[in-house]
Image 1 (cartoon, rainbow, N blue to C red):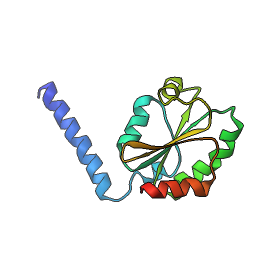
Image 2 (cartoon, rainbow, N blue to C red):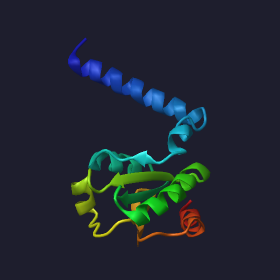
Image 3 (cartoon, rainbow, N blue to C red):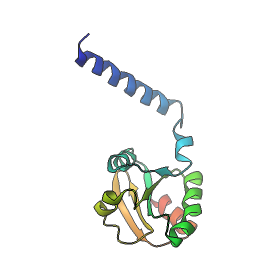
Image 4 (cartoon, rainbow, N blue to C red):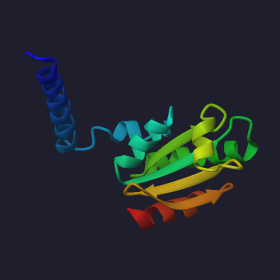
Length: 136
């Protein structure tokens, strides 16, 4: 079997696994019931490209308002269909620069792969949930 055939077979298996997961219900739901810590620009892009609603929280460990927001976004991840992505601006400086994050917390809301909202500062849970529902 050629290398090309092996790659095709591997890709076919990956696609088959992905499709069977969608048919069986929300196999990915447990992964999305907690915030996803973004590890790279590509990782965030993958989350956004999956479609649906993605609330992205750019934060820093040393930031007081970020600590206030943390339990709110954790609850949102558990209680809504939105994916909550957390981006540590100190660990992911390039990603923060790419999104022009000048202060933390900064949140971006993506719907169906497109950026639809940008918010700077702490927001209340009900305000964020209402915003997410507008796009689901």
